[in-house]
Length: 289
Ligand code: UTP
Image 1 (spheres, rainbow, N blue to C red):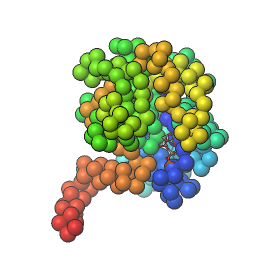
Image 2 (image 1 turned 120 degrees about the horizontal axis):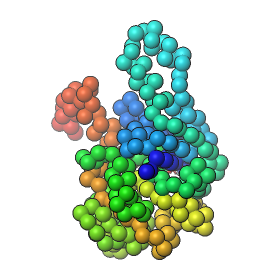
Image 3 (image 1 turned 135 degrees about the vertical axis):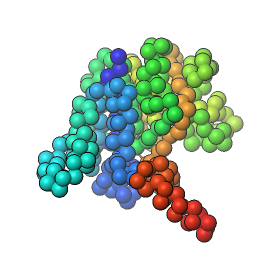
Image 4 (image 1 turned 90 degrees about the horizontal axis):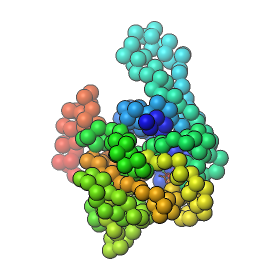
């Protein structure tokens, strides 16, 4: 049973400055909901009951968001806004949420290493706190857990990307063993189009067994002088069978300006309250471009 999740959310978010100067990028809203709330909802919908968030300086708003807010709750009750009251209360009751501080931003690999003590000797999932994934087959984290239950090894979510865009991503080098599962030989970070072994990009959701911590511990700073998760995965795959899982759907990286705007438009169009009006405005607006 996979019950624990780790959400790294300590990064500086330099691609979204100045908004991220004093506000966590994980709190950036998609319509009216911070991205990290969607991430927690995905974990909970996948059966996760225990979540560890890796946070750092300037990230207190994340803690507050998942805490009870008695004064706000009282105000909503007085205004008889019971629908919102229920929504607000539910946020603090979704799961057991814990926090640990990454004191120096030494990269994603280092952030995950901070989860070692909490995770202990269990398989666990990682969901990046600044990225949403949506799939027509239900929560992607749940799909990873299903593949883990069959294969009993680490499983990494993979998104099929346009071949000409592979150089933006980490991709898997491996062989298909079923419709949606690939057995990995290696993980290649940002390959050139010519060198890319596949167009299956690592997509911000991972399921690891605790051995990953041994590899992270031995990983030296790499690109940008940061401990890179991919470097640890490359060592791990030499000794442990690892798998990739293609999901039918899409990743939304909100940590950059264009990704943020596109995601808000896509989600806005599906929103029952504003979708129809946004669509009609967008059509008129596009006509004027
Ligand atoms: P990113 O590279 O997208 O985040 O890391 P970043 O470093 O905050 O962003 P830029 O590149 O400066 O704009 C992916 C995830 O890993 C976390 C981030 O918070 C994000 O959710 N992360 C990254 C950490 O927790 N610690 C780090 O040292 C680096």
